[in-house]
Structures are given as C-alpha cells and as structure tokens.
Image 1 (tube, helix red, strand yellow):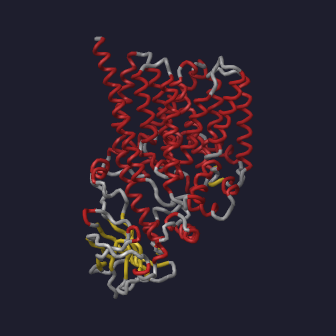
Image 2 (cartoon, one colour; image 1 turned 135 degrees about the vertical axis):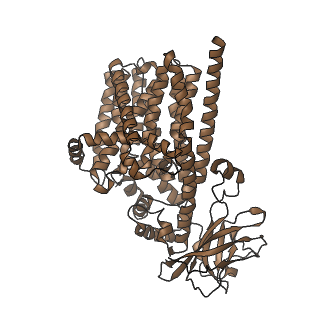
Image 3 (tube, one colour; image 1 turned 180 degrees about the vertical axis):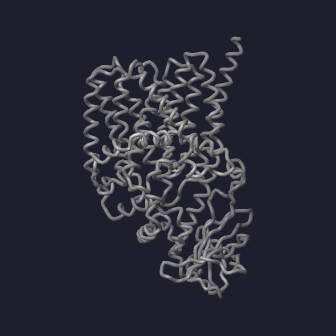
Length: 594
C-alpha cells in the first residue's frame, strides 16, 4: 500500500510538471504569434491625447475613469524611443505576466507545511490560471497586458512582502513601506487596482499583525482614494455609492455571472461554434457556478477572519489574497458598468474580464489544495480536479490562440490600408475603438506625420514613385509565384477610387515575401502589400499549434487611384530589393463591390 501511495504521488508530480510545461509553452507560442502588432482599440484615443500633450499630462489623465499613471510610461517611452512599435510593449506585458507568476509561486514553494506533490499541483494551477488564452483580450495586447499585469505584479509583491509576527519593528516599518509603495503602483495602474487596499487590510487582520501595521495601511488607503479622486477628470464618488444602494440584488446577480464567466467560456470551447454573447447574458451555468464560487469564497474568508491563521501557510495566504483581491475587483467592475451609460450594461460579460475572474478561481483552487493536504479523503479529489483543469480548459485555450492569430492577420491588413491611405472601414473595424473608425483615421494622420507604428518603416513614401527610384539595388530573381485578384473597391483618403487585392504569393523554396509593391503599366508604385506574418513559413508551428488552419502565404494590399482599364502587377520588395518576376493582378469576371 505504501509503495502504491509513493508511486501515485510521483505520477501526480510528473503529470503536473508535464501539464504545466505544455500549457506554459503553448501559451507563450500563442501569445508570440498572435499578439497585436499595431495600435488598436482604446489606444487610438490614448495616443491621440499623448501625442498632443506632455508626458506628465498624459500620465495624470484618467481614461474612462481609470488612472493609468504607471503603465502609461511604457507606451510613452515606446512612442518616444521605439517609434510606436508594439513589440516592446508586448515584451513588457509578457515580462510582467511572468513576474506575476513568479511572485505568486514564491510563497507556494516556501511553504513548509505542504509536500512536493501539493506544490507541483499548485504550480500547475497558477500557470493555467495566468496563461489560459481565454484571457487573450488582455494578455495578447502589449498595452492592456502592461496595465493589468502591472496591477497583478504589484499586488502579488505586496502579498509576498506583508510582514509576519515576530519580525523586528525596524524591519516591519521598512517592509510596510514597500507594501504601501506596491499598493500605490497597483492603484494608479488601473482603476481595479484600488482593490489592493481592502485586500491588504483584510490580510493584515488575518495575519495577526500588530496594530501599528494598520496605521500606515489605513492612511495609505485614504490618501490613495483622495489622490485618485483629484486626478483629472474628477469623478462623482457619490454617484457610485447611490448606484450601489439602488441596484440591490441585480448587482449580486451580475457579480455571480461575472465570477462564473470562466466556466461559460471553458464549456464554449467544447462546442463546435463559440457560444454567443446573448447566451452569456442568460446562461444559468455562469450564474450558478459563479454563485457557488462566491459562496465558497465568502465562507473561506469568514473562517479566516475568525481564525486569523493565515500565517501558518503561505500557500493559503496567496490563495486567500487572490480570492479577496479579485472578488473586490469584480465588485468594482460591476459598479463601474452600472454607473456608465446604458449601452455598457452588459459589458461585464466581455471576455476581457476573464483576466480577473480566472484569478479568482485560481485562488479558490489554491485554498482547496492547501486544505486537502491535511485531509486524506479530500486530497486526491482535489488533485484530480487540478490535474483535469488543463484538459478541461484546453479547447478554449486552443480556439482563443487560433482566434488571436486570425485577429493579428486582420489587424495587419487594416494597418496596410492605413499605410496606403485607403479608407476601408470593413478591414479597419477590428482596430477601431467604440468611437468608430473616424478616430482611427484622425490619429493615423498624426502617426503618419511622426512616422510611428505602421508608418515607421516609411513604405508610404514609395507611393507615387517609379519603381526604379525606390531602390538602388539591382532586381533579384526570387522565383516569385502565386496569384492575386481584386477583392473589393474602396476609397482613398483624397476621395479617389481604390481597390483591395488579396491572394497567395510565395518565393522559391516556399519562402514568404513580407513586403510587396503594386505597379501600374508605367512602373509607378500604386500600392503596398503585406503578407500575413513573418512566422507563416514555420510549418511545424502551424501543424502543432494551429492544426494547419492558418494559411501561410496570404497576401493583402491596395491599389490607390485605381483604374479598371489598366493592368497592374505585383513585385516583392523585401529589404528594398525588387524581384525580377511580377505577378499580374487579375480582375474578377463580376465587378467587385465596395
């Protein structure tokens, strides 16, 4: 019996290590190949303000009621030093995500009250909770990930640094100062970061910290709220309080649906087609699972308040901290949606809030794992649930990774339309914020003038030039093959006709040309084209991670001042070297529509 128990423990450890490694590796690959490479969503508005104001003005301004003071320096530095390239932002966000995981795992592996198997299972839980691709609306965006992961990294650091009983007074004060600093970074990185203060006060009580520790935490809480309120534009705090009092049970129901969101999306991954947003509003699965999670969380928090025993297990501490922090975050999200315009009434069901609700369940499972350590009858049940977790959520993990890849392709196509100065609302929709494409066109002109983001390479300068004047290098035989056709008509920014062209083009050896030029019969450059991605040549990645569902040779471009009577042709132009071969642009038998 003893040998069987040892073998079972070892098998659980190996399975946890393998599952964690596979999930982490797949998450990093999906993020690397599917992250946003151009400006998108709310960042058009954020950049519009940043490009016309000082760094300090940009950092101090609240956007949609959120203070983005600390993360704003990431994109302000990116605009200043890296020409608005999204890659540094993505790497910053990914680094913060890894830092969050590391800070959450340090207490897990320091805990001497649990065994190696428990630590391995807890590590798997933390990795799955942080790298699940259903959270991709946040973690696949360099800007959004920098915001939210900075909040979580700061919160995790504060949880890790919370002083313990028996520590000298001098060290307690210095550590408390660091905790307060981490709290301020979280608070002024995003509005939900304010949840750090009630969480720290709750943890301080449950850790039986001396009363002198509460004074700096309480003072910092008041100071943070006052400063937050005074940052422009000012918020009407009484409105939030009045909303909370008048909504009543409706807010509780929404909180349950928000908390149950990970279950709804995990189940959606097992369906052939993703479940609709309308179904999410009426789903009983998310409602009842969320309600069960909230009840379990409140029960666990109540017991912890009574027993004040968090100091016994650092694993339980990090689990309780995640639960407390994210339940306050979700409450703030619900209140914020309620205060905003009626069109935001169901915004809390958006997949981007999975960033927080997933961590809520991660913390709850960590509490269960720690609890099961001392209860033999519960231990293997919890272990099996944790080991089954990556399998249960993997279909949605895969689907979200695939969706990110397609979103990146479409986003780069939208950016290509901007480089060509073409107004193609259909292609640009994926990049546009709620304000619509008008704001995109406005900010794109500023980016063009400053040579930022998609305009940094200067490809737009080739438009209207003769092909002989865009490069001093001789033409190169590339073995260019493929086909392309006019897919739709559009309009240039000056009102002249334009045409969207698509197709598949490759060089010899199945290499993919990244930059292409579209020429009229006189050799004048009338448009710029772009292939889907630099990673499309790797058939192994396409086969293993995308099941061959992502084409690697797709080409997308535009013709400015389009004249249907002319015959246009395409050359590759990688590294400024034009190919000898050309691919004719075919006109379909039926007239393309706008």
